[in-house]
Length: 424
Figure 1: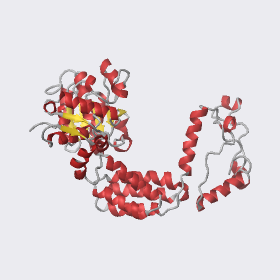
Figure 2 (figure 1 turned 90 degrees about the horizontal axis):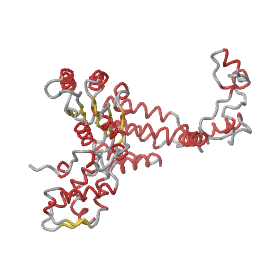
Figure 3 (figure 1 turned 180 degrees about the vertical axis):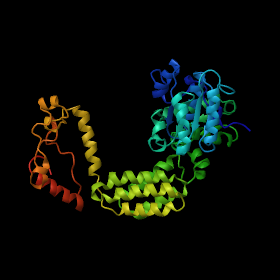
Figure 4 (figure 1 turned 90 degrees about the vertical axis):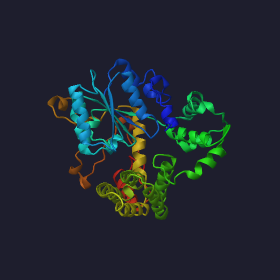
């Protein structure tokens, strides 16, 4: 059986790799490591079809390392240990240099499976390269994450995808035999969603399903491909569009729409923890102190569905989604931290006022650390008006309570305390 076009065009050396110039360009971190011959364990994080597996293969080839690959879907602790034993002995597959062990979809490894890698990575028996489409902070155990450098791979840009199509027409032995005219690319690019593998699969379908000369137009793409596109592709454009509609429906206090988009994700096979994580973020970003219980509800939902899984988790998710959609809304906390970070970037490392500084030693006390600090509990209503911000930005209001019952009470509380200092 012929290999798919994406497989036939898979680059075998760094110079043929079209994207990720921030990593493999002349000053890129991975290119530098290959050049210096010092490849450390790393995790490649990015959406599907951006070249994670290809890059791992190239790293092994150009650094002249033995290479072995496991899929987290079909491999277990036993498979990992067998590879590690071969690496320690230096026999069979592995020779002089410690091998690269590539684990695809490493986020699917359980905690015990990830634990089985720790010793080998720490002692340098293997150099681990993990590939994941999920945030490693959530899916990779901290002990393993601390031993790996995380590199983010970006979706292909428009120019890179078009260059890939031209390369396919010029270099692929099958496509070179066809008379292909690339007239329009908008629909091709939209349906691929930055996924090079998906782009090439669609392109090959269009070319091979058309007899004689082929003119690629938007209409041809829509006629041949769009009617066969699944309602929900959890790795493509539909994924991001439906998640966006889901979040915006909850933010807009429409439980009917929110539950509908939830159902679309569930029926499309979306990861239950991905949905629950989005609800956790929304509970703080869009509801916040208008209803602090929302964050507790979302966190409990995350814990529950992580334990239970589908199909029962659909009920818990539905309850949480409806609760969040019908809750009072406020983005005041979200805006406050954004403004605070912007202020920090603008003003730099301003000095902590002396009264607020810690004074654990006599020297620190002698030079004024902690002087004139007014302990709030020594005053009426456990409050004393004092300066808690650096002098350069004193009286700057960063938190603006939202227009809802709970935060309105916060605003009145702050007005009474800070009568003249802050703008409430």
